[in-house]
Image 1: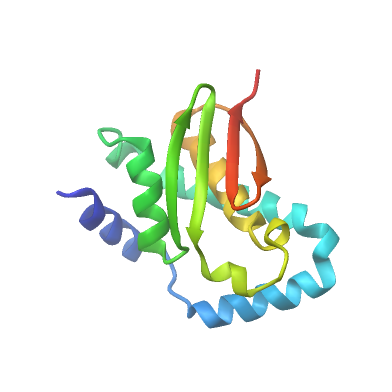
Image 2: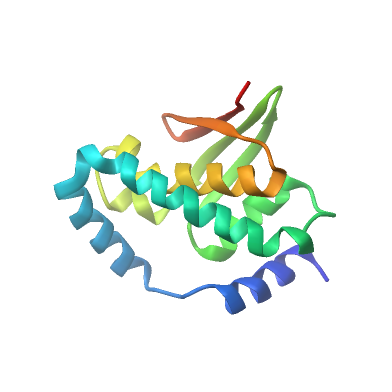
Length: 144
């Protein structure tokens, strides 16, 4: 089975479909009150990323992790990304995401993507990462 088709099937079984505008509105309201607490949102997203990876990693071990991440972002509707392998981690450049409509500061509205990606990679690869945002990119480096 092709990666994209396989991902669609798993997400249908494991996921919940919500309208993007609803998520933008909810997240926008949360950020109005919790701007400084965006780290809490990131931590929750990290747990979600780990949960997803743990539920799908056995089915996707034969695919390149960069492909998996790119297809995962697209098939979940979270956006479009480009994944680059770094010497000790990854650079995930956000090409497009509806979350940018939630707040005018990317460093706040991209926290869920940062957390989810970090958690996903940690669980999928059994490697701990430090992550940070650099503009529209998530930089993940292996912890030493």
